[in-house]
Length: 252
Image (cartoon, rainbow, N blue to C red; front, side):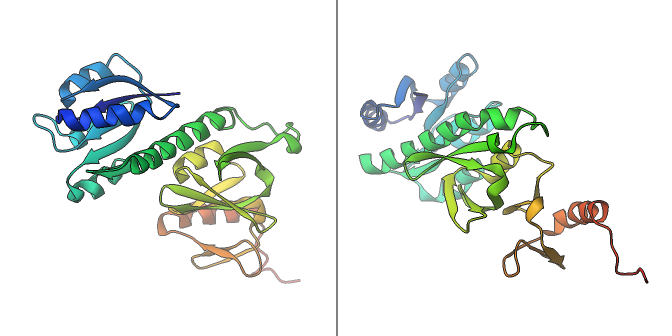
């Protein structure tokens, strides 16, 4: 159950959101507010999982309100002004609902929030607990919610991860892939750092699958490669130099 609040200075809009929330069984509406300042005071005392917030409000608009939060819950912006969309997504909003929106639109946004919440809960243990070398390899799994089910993925079968906006595509050693609603930076925190490395803002590779590398590329098979980002090159090269013995300049 996701505990949520709704903030909107328009009474009709607030009633509509309240009605929509009542139709979704995994949402629990804790409080509603017609201004962000009251919501700000409430948030200082209560832990909330999800906020539905209008952007264009007097005194404190929705974007500035979200910026003030130290511990940010998931956010879904609701507004009549499309020009705020980019600013909203810069704050890692789950979704951006443009008024007037239907229940179907609202339900899709809520489903995204529920999927992300479930995935975070499922991945809390592997992300917080250190990975032990003595742990049997067959027990090293992460759970991933995708296609309306939770799949158990063996960490050692993950070849690389690819960011696709709000989603991550997990490429596996059997040439299949799983796409899940999750951010790459959170997935990076959930995986053992000694086995996975971020080599690009959009890619994390399993170090055990590195076959070769050239300028700006890491090959994970004879034909498949991912780019190396400029800010990651030094870290990657340090790993390669430390891990592998270079025989290029040696003579027999």
